[in-house]
Image (cartoon, rainbow, N blue to C red; front, side):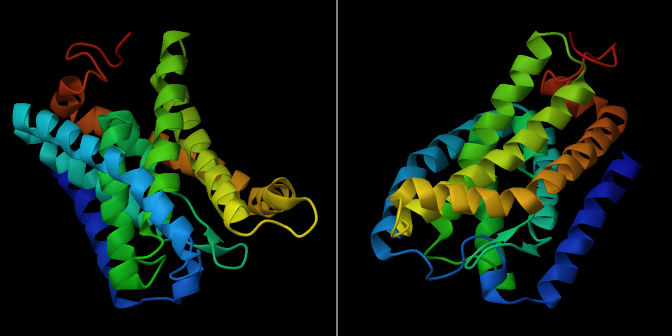
Length: 253
Protein backbone atom coordinates (compact mmCIF):
# COMPACT_ATOMS: atom_id res chain seq x y z
CA UNK A 1 0.00 0.00 0.00
CA UNK A 2 2.94 2.32 0.72
CA UNK A 3 4.26 1.97 -2.84
CA UNK A 4 0.72 2.36 -4.15
CA UNK A 5 0.47 5.74 -2.40
CA UNK A 6 3.92 6.68 -3.70
CA UNK A 7 2.70 6.08 -7.25
CA UNK A 8 -0.30 8.30 -6.62
CA UNK A 9 1.93 10.99 -5.10
CA UNK A 10 4.20 10.87 -8.17
CA UNK A 11 1.23 11.53 -10.45
CA UNK A 12 0.06 14.41 -8.25
CA UNK A 13 3.59 15.90 -8.24
CA UNK A 14 3.76 15.77 -12.03
CA UNK A 15 0.29 17.32 -12.19
CA UNK A 16 1.51 20.17 -10.01
CA UNK A 17 4.59 20.72 -12.15
CA UNK A 18 2.49 21.00 -15.30
CA UNK A 19 0.12 23.37 -13.50
CA UNK A 20 2.92 25.79 -12.64
CA UNK A 21 4.31 25.80 -16.17
CA UNK A 22 1.37 26.44 -18.51
CA UNK A 23 1.97 26.17 -22.25
CA UNK A 24 0.55 27.66 -25.42
CA UNK A 25 -3.19 27.19 -25.87
CA UNK A 26 -3.04 25.77 -29.39
CA UNK A 27 -0.70 22.98 -28.36
CA UNK A 28 -3.09 20.47 -26.82
CA UNK A 29 -6.16 18.66 -28.13
CA UNK A 30 -8.37 20.77 -30.42
CA UNK A 31 -7.61 24.27 -29.27
CA UNK A 32 -10.01 26.86 -27.89
CA UNK A 33 -12.20 28.53 -30.51
CA UNK A 34 -10.90 26.36 -33.37
CA UNK A 35 -14.16 24.55 -34.17
CA UNK A 36 -17.12 26.39 -35.73
CA UNK A 37 -19.91 26.97 -33.20
CA UNK A 38 -22.27 24.39 -34.72
CA UNK A 39 -19.69 21.63 -34.41
CA UNK A 40 -18.69 22.66 -30.89
CA UNK A 41 -22.36 22.44 -29.86
CA UNK A 42 -22.92 19.17 -31.75
CA UNK A 43 -20.05 17.35 -30.01
CA UNK A 44 -21.03 18.76 -26.62
CA UNK A 45 -24.62 17.52 -26.99
CA UNK A 46 -23.44 14.13 -28.26
CA UNK A 47 -21.06 13.73 -25.31
CA UNK A 48 -23.52 14.75 -22.58
CA UNK A 49 -25.42 11.41 -22.29
CA UNK A 50 -22.12 9.55 -21.85
CA UNK A 51 -21.18 11.91 -19.02
CA UNK A 52 -24.48 11.30 -17.25
CA UNK A 53 -24.20 7.52 -17.64
CA UNK A 54 -20.59 7.72 -16.49
CA UNK A 55 -21.52 9.56 -13.29
CA UNK A 56 -24.12 6.87 -12.55
CA UNK A 57 -21.59 4.11 -13.24
CA UNK A 58 -18.94 5.65 -10.96
CA UNK A 59 -21.47 6.31 -8.20
CA UNK A 60 -22.55 2.67 -8.18
CA UNK A 61 -19.00 1.34 -8.07
CA UNK A 62 -17.78 3.76 -5.38
CA UNK A 63 -20.86 3.51 -3.18
CA UNK A 64 -20.55 -0.27 -3.21
CA UNK A 65 -16.77 -0.25 -2.63
CA UNK A 66 -15.55 3.11 -1.22
CA UNK A 67 -11.96 1.80 -1.16
CA UNK A 68 -11.91 2.18 -4.95
CA UNK A 69 -11.82 5.99 -4.68
CA UNK A 70 -8.02 6.09 -4.47
CA UNK A 71 -7.67 3.85 -7.51
CA UNK A 72 -10.09 6.11 -9.37
CA UNK A 73 -7.89 9.07 -8.42
CA UNK A 74 -4.80 7.28 -9.72
CA UNK A 75 -6.59 6.63 -13.02
CA UNK A 76 -7.44 10.32 -13.34
CA UNK A 77 -3.91 11.46 -12.46
CA UNK A 78 -2.45 8.96 -14.95
CA UNK A 79 -4.71 10.30 -17.73
CA UNK A 80 -3.93 13.91 -16.82
CA UNK A 81 -0.16 13.50 -16.83
CA UNK A 82 0.07 11.43 -20.00
CA UNK A 83 -2.35 13.59 -21.99
CA UNK A 84 -0.33 16.68 -21.03
CA UNK A 85 2.73 15.34 -22.86
CA UNK A 86 2.26 17.03 -26.21
CA UNK A 87 3.90 16.75 -29.62
CA UNK A 88 2.84 19.42 -32.16
CA UNK A 89 1.00 17.71 -35.03
CA UNK A 90 -1.39 19.74 -37.20
CA UNK A 91 -2.81 23.25 -36.99
CA UNK A 92 -5.17 23.54 -34.05
CA UNK A 93 -4.24 20.23 -32.46
CA UNK A 94 -1.36 18.03 -31.32
CA UNK A 95 -0.38 14.43 -30.71
CA UNK A 96 -0.02 13.04 -27.19
CA UNK A 97 -0.69 9.92 -25.13
CA UNK A 98 -4.22 9.81 -23.75
CA UNK A 99 -3.78 7.79 -20.55
CA UNK A 100 -7.39 6.61 -20.63
CA UNK A 101 -6.57 2.96 -21.28
CA UNK A 102 -5.69 2.25 -17.64
CA UNK A 103 -8.91 3.70 -16.23
CA UNK A 104 -10.95 1.98 -18.93
CA UNK A 105 -9.54 -1.42 -18.02
CA UNK A 106 -10.13 -0.74 -14.31
CA UNK A 107 -13.52 1.01 -14.30
CA UNK A 108 -15.00 0.59 -17.77
CA UNK A 109 -15.56 3.02 -20.66
CA UNK A 110 -18.42 5.01 -19.13
CA UNK A 111 -16.34 6.04 -16.13
CA UNK A 112 -13.62 7.36 -18.43
CA UNK A 113 -16.08 9.75 -20.06
CA UNK A 114 -16.36 11.56 -16.72
CA UNK A 115 -12.65 11.30 -15.89
CA UNK A 116 -11.69 12.39 -19.41
CA UNK A 117 -13.99 15.41 -19.21
CA UNK A 118 -12.56 16.44 -15.82
CA UNK A 119 -8.96 15.98 -17.07
CA UNK A 120 -9.64 18.07 -20.17
CA UNK A 121 -11.47 20.74 -18.16
CA UNK A 122 -8.53 21.12 -15.77
CA UNK A 123 -6.09 21.24 -18.68
CA UNK A 124 -8.14 23.94 -20.38
CA UNK A 125 -8.32 26.04 -17.20
CA UNK A 126 -4.92 25.39 -15.59
CA UNK A 127 -2.67 24.67 -18.59
CA UNK A 128 -4.50 26.51 -21.40
CA UNK A 129 -4.52 23.23 -23.36
CA UNK A 130 -7.59 22.56 -25.45
CA UNK A 131 -10.44 24.84 -24.48
CA UNK A 132 -13.91 25.20 -23.07
CA UNK A 133 -15.64 25.57 -26.45
CA UNK A 134 -13.92 22.42 -27.72
CA UNK A 135 -14.38 20.49 -24.46
CA UNK A 136 -17.26 18.43 -25.88
CA UNK A 137 -15.34 17.43 -29.01
CA UNK A 138 -12.16 16.61 -27.10
CA UNK A 139 -14.08 14.66 -24.46
CA UNK A 140 -15.86 12.63 -27.13
CA UNK A 141 -12.62 11.61 -28.85
CA UNK A 142 -10.50 11.00 -25.73
CA UNK A 143 -13.12 10.13 -23.10
CA UNK A 144 -15.75 8.26 -25.12
CA UNK A 145 -14.52 6.85 -28.45
CA UNK A 146 -11.06 5.83 -27.28
CA UNK A 147 -12.23 4.13 -24.06
CA UNK A 148 -15.07 2.21 -25.78
CA UNK A 149 -12.63 0.80 -28.32
CA UNK A 150 -10.09 0.08 -25.58
CA UNK A 151 -12.68 -1.75 -23.48
CA UNK A 152 -13.89 -3.81 -26.44
CA UNK A 153 -10.33 -4.80 -27.28
CA UNK A 154 -9.60 -5.71 -23.64
CA UNK A 155 -12.71 -7.87 -23.24
CA UNK A 156 -12.16 -9.61 -26.59
CA UNK A 157 -8.48 -10.23 -25.86
CA UNK A 158 -9.28 -11.91 -22.56
CA UNK A 159 -12.04 -13.99 -24.12
CA UNK A 160 -9.63 -15.42 -26.68
CA UNK A 161 -7.20 -16.34 -23.92
CA UNK A 162 -4.58 -13.61 -24.10
CA UNK A 163 -2.81 -12.70 -20.87
CA UNK A 164 -3.80 -9.58 -18.94
CA UNK A 165 -0.54 -7.92 -19.96
CA UNK A 166 -1.15 -8.32 -23.69
CA UNK A 167 -4.83 -7.41 -23.33
CA UNK A 168 -3.96 -4.21 -21.45
CA UNK A 169 -1.28 -3.29 -24.00
CA UNK A 170 -3.63 -3.75 -26.97
CA UNK A 171 -6.45 -1.89 -25.21
CA UNK A 172 -4.32 1.13 -24.31
CA UNK A 173 -2.56 1.34 -27.68
CA UNK A 174 -5.66 0.90 -29.86
CA UNK A 175 -7.73 3.18 -27.62
CA UNK A 176 -5.05 5.81 -28.12
CA UNK A 177 -5.15 5.41 -31.90
CA UNK A 178 -8.96 5.55 -31.99
CA UNK A 179 -8.86 8.88 -30.18
CA UNK A 180 -6.91 10.34 -33.08
CA UNK A 181 -9.01 8.65 -35.73
CA UNK A 182 -12.02 10.42 -34.23
CA UNK A 183 -10.10 13.69 -33.85
CA UNK A 184 -9.20 13.50 -37.54
CA UNK A 185 -12.84 12.93 -38.46
CA UNK A 186 -13.93 15.83 -36.25
CA UNK A 187 -11.50 18.15 -37.99
CA UNK A 188 -12.46 16.80 -41.41
CA UNK A 189 -16.16 17.38 -40.77
CA UNK A 190 -15.49 20.94 -39.63
CA UNK A 191 -12.97 21.73 -42.36
CA UNK A 192 -13.65 19.68 -45.52
CA UNK A 193 -11.13 20.01 -48.33
CA UNK A 194 -12.04 22.12 -51.34
CA UNK A 195 -11.24 19.13 -53.53
CA UNK A 196 -12.50 15.80 -52.22
CA UNK A 197 -14.52 17.19 -49.32
CA UNK A 198 -14.66 15.44 -45.93
CA UNK A 199 -13.06 12.19 -47.13
CA UNK A 200 -10.00 13.94 -48.58
CA UNK A 201 -9.64 16.07 -45.48
CA UNK A 202 -9.92 13.00 -43.20
CA UNK A 203 -7.20 11.19 -45.15
CA UNK A 204 -4.94 14.22 -44.81
CA UNK A 205 -5.45 14.54 -41.05
CA UNK A 206 -5.11 10.78 -40.47
CA UNK A 207 -1.89 10.69 -42.46
CA UNK A 208 -0.33 13.51 -40.48
CA UNK A 209 -1.43 12.16 -37.09
CA UNK A 210 -0.24 8.62 -37.88
CA UNK A 211 3.37 9.73 -38.12
CA UNK A 212 3.51 10.76 -34.48
CA UNK A 213 0.62 8.78 -32.99
CA UNK A 214 1.64 5.20 -33.77
CA UNK A 215 4.88 5.27 -31.72
CA UNK A 216 3.06 7.19 -28.98
CA UNK A 217 0.33 4.54 -28.88
CA UNK A 218 2.90 1.75 -28.54
CA UNK A 219 4.68 3.65 -25.76
CA UNK A 220 1.43 4.29 -23.93
CA UNK A 221 0.51 0.62 -24.20
CA UNK A 222 3.80 -0.46 -22.64
CA UNK A 223 3.60 2.11 -19.84
CA UNK A 224 0.02 1.14 -19.06
CA UNK A 225 1.06 -2.50 -18.70
CA UNK A 226 3.79 -1.46 -16.22
CA UNK A 227 1.32 0.49 -14.08
CA UNK A 228 -1.31 -2.26 -14.34
CA UNK A 229 1.21 -4.84 -13.13
CA UNK A 230 2.20 -2.50 -10.31
CA UNK A 231 -1.42 -2.24 -9.20
CA UNK A 232 -1.87 -5.99 -9.54
CA UNK A 233 1.04 -6.48 -7.15
CA UNK A 234 0.30 -3.77 -4.58
CA UNK A 235 -3.49 -3.33 -4.83
CA UNK A 236 -4.72 -6.90 -4.90
CA UNK A 237 -7.82 -6.12 -2.86
CA UNK A 238 -9.00 -3.32 -5.16
CA UNK A 239 -8.12 -5.26 -8.31
CA UNK A 240 -10.06 -8.20 -6.92
CA UNK A 241 -13.09 -5.99 -6.31
CA UNK A 242 -12.93 -4.96 -9.97
CA UNK A 243 -12.77 -8.65 -11.01
CA UNK A 244 -9.41 -8.11 -12.68
CA UNK A 245 -7.61 -10.66 -10.55
CA UNK A 246 -8.67 -13.50 -8.32
CA UNK A 247 -7.79 -13.00 -4.64
CA UNK A 248 -5.83 -16.25 -4.74
CA UNK A 249 -4.46 -16.06 -8.27
CA UNK A 250 -2.30 -13.62 -10.19
CA UNK A 251 -4.71 -13.31 -13.09
CA UNK A 252 -8.39 -13.90 -13.55
CA UNK A 253 -9.42 -16.43 -16.18
